[in-house]
Amino acid sequence: MPFEFLGTFTKSQFDRFAGFVRDQTSLIDGRLVHLKAEKARIGNLAFAFDAGGVPTHVTSDAPTTYVGRLFGVYEALGGDAFFDLQVRSTSQPVFKLKGDEVKNSQVMSNGEVIGTPGLSDAESALLMQQARSWVSDTLSYRRDALERKIRRAIDYADQLQAEINQLQALKAEATVSGALEFVLGGIQQLLSDRQYMAASNDGTKPDPHGKLAYAPFAAYMPGPKRAPGDDFERTLDGPSVPEAGT
Image (cartoon, rainbow, N blue to C red):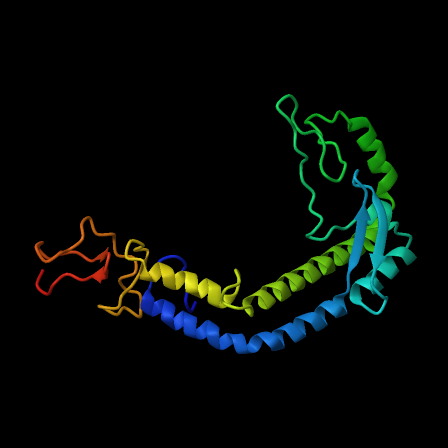
């Protein structure tokens, strides 16, 4: 894969990568138009919950959207969103509430009590299994399949919005955290720092292919009064190559 490196690379490799991603910024506006149109096509389904995690309100987009049509079918087939669906967006995570020094947390943020091993529910489980077995196919195609489609669509809408937010942030000025030039500038600072040798400044010995990027760190730095090293290594001044014949 092109540019398949993370924290260990040479300046020559980074310069090629920086040139590539800067060229790609010309496509951001077009991608934003497409992503926003796709998000409008998918639509959304939003639940409001009270402090105990009980749903109080559900808002669905117009039935012309994909989610709106799915939700309309779900209700037409007898689904009750307040009891059976209760989907959450990424902005409504479920988490364990904080305990204290005396007692561990016992409740999730959606109001559910955290269970313990050993349900002792064999008898009721067997009876419930018998009561439900004859409608399992109906539950599967009238509820489960629709619920999965709705949840996947909402997850997809969340992913679209996350990419929209990322692209909009990348277009910001270089002084804004998260902007492309802000990030590239941070990497340039590391390359300019002699003490940071993971990203090697290979200005004196250009290494555009990164062949020396993973050379071990030098045990000591070569100097005018020290014998030249006979190993491949990374120094404060970039990669060091053994002299010919050593």
